[in-house]
Length: 341
Image 1 (cartoon, one colour):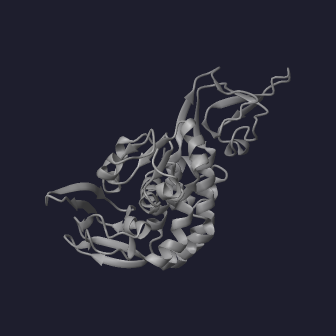
Image 2 (cartoon, helix red, strand yellow; image 1 turned 120 degrees about the vertical axis):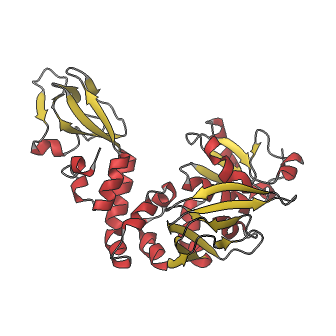
Image 3 (tube, helix red, strand yellow; image 1 turned 90 degrees about the horizontal axis):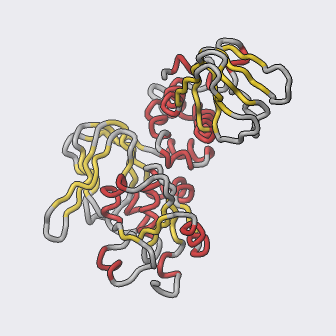
């Protein structure tokens, strides 16, 4: 799927070129053979279907003659039977190629593009692409559009050389960083002085949030592995513009309801703290290991995170949200409860 296939579709035709590229990544191609049902009447699925080639029939299933729709016609620029529940069923008349978008994905993309296109160009008129790259990050889709202009206007460009240590384990944290270009390595030195690699980071990814959210010293060292450019956001701006939308709190009662529905309960305290007592049914992934362990978790399963006070679990939720997880924080942590169960 390329941008040329999508550029004539409505409302994708009004997207910026950078956002249209993102739309290609969100699109799913589907080929329907003659007679194959594409979707049923009265269905209420959360998808938008566009016809790229071939012909389909839209049928009210009431005995009336179905409406035939051919690719390339003005009507085919619009989603097929968009209103939900659908008033029509849709079947392929000839071999038909369709493209499918998740309604939420498309709505988020349109909202971000319309809300930020002018501001992005104003801030970085010669190269808005990096901002749209950042907005592909699932976490930033949760930032209210009204915050985005202020957010990007507060970033400061910082050229960095290969080998540069940007944050050092044990030092206080004052800034959040996004990698605009280049790459970095996240490492942690253990008590026995062994050093382990927790993650590698590329353009569009961020780091430094753990210390800002937890109030603790940096729990890892981040070293540039190639020359590049970072975008630095001061702690006060991070707190005002990112913390609230990206760290969602739940009460114990709300958390229990989500766990009954299949959510996973994760204690992000250290191993020794977990061994001394924790909440029933929880698993232990210490915050410092979360980058390393995140890929082993199922993104389809919501996470309820907790620690002693809520600070470390807030950092954990931010980190997982950036990776596309539905992550919540148990408000107040264990300190807000009577004691571990």
